[in-house]
Amino acid sequence: MTDFQNPKATARAYMSAFDSCTFDEKRNVLSSAVTPDYHWRGLHPFHEQKGADAVFDTFWAPFCNSFNAIERRELIFFAGLNDCDDQATTWTCSMGHFKALFDHAWLGIRPTNKMVLIRYAEFHRIEGDKIAETALFIDILDLIYQAGLWPLPPMTAAASHFPGPLTNDGQLFDAQDPVEGEKTLRTILDMAGNIAKANEILQGKSDAKPLTPQEELQLTWTENMSWYGPAGIGSTFTIDRYVEQHQAPFRVHNDNRVFNGHVARFAEGHYGGFFGWPNLTITPTGGYMGLPGSNKPSDMRVVDVYRREGDLLAENWIFIDMLHFLNQQGLDVLARIATVPRT
Image 1 (cartoon, rainbow, N blue to C red):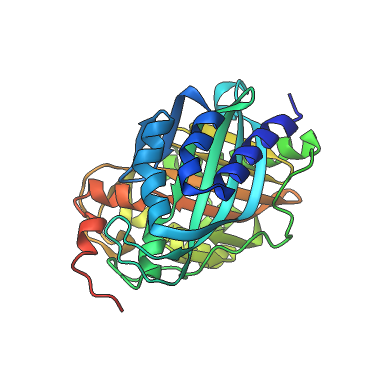
Image 2 (tube, rainbow, N blue to C red; image 1 turned 90 degrees about the horizontal axis):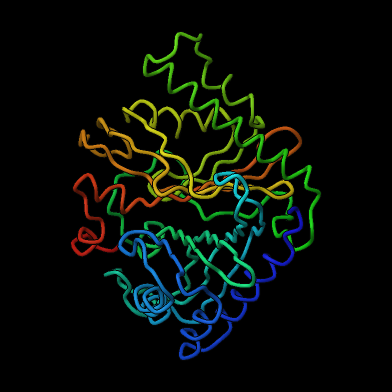
């Protein structure tokens, strides 16, 4: 199947209904949109939930009680067949911000009574006209920063809100040329393959001649690549600054990097992305994100969303479950913010 209009319509109908209904209606809207065995993944401290009631009680009810006038400010939307299961399932991806008023405490984060822009990426697996599976990634650490709390050392890259695509064409409501989606997915896979080769060389598992970081990136990235990283790491611009401000710190200060695979990976048109649960397992050796090493293997749950330009990737939006990653190393960020003064 290359026509994703019906799955996209299913996801959009749910998002529109859920976003626009009253709080008292939201439980029923969610229940009517999903399958009986609905599987939901959210970040720490929500993790995995089964069934609409558990999802609503655990995540949506507290979220909607803490934030008022919530608006979904979508930047990117696309669909595709899952490359991780031989294209047996169809997924959609919506990415952008939830704009809202932060009026009541959430997860122990003190309210600001001001507008906040909450970064999100929401994946839905569609079965017929129902949603069978969801992964909702929210940059909770970025929200903590917006609330004036800084529980971590300064970022190596820039702190910024996620901009939309440079081309302003990220919402793929209409059908796309399947050849373009295949090209996007192939470019993403080539990029990931280059990372795997570099890791094998760094870990002494390959005798191949290593490329410089710039040479490796130039194979699949534009020179002016934009890499919009999560809070705790930050965002970078151009290959050279990406190497300096993210790639080098990540590779130097983390050992035993293991790729665990993805749950979903797909593309449509010039856009594509994936998420894993977890994608990576790494061992921080000291210095990463300005923190001491733990020598504890720690999982990273990651979302990557890409825009391709010609034959190369041009923009990349990233979410990482930072609270879960740090919690495995003994740092409970939500407990720490209770003792950090607001600036």
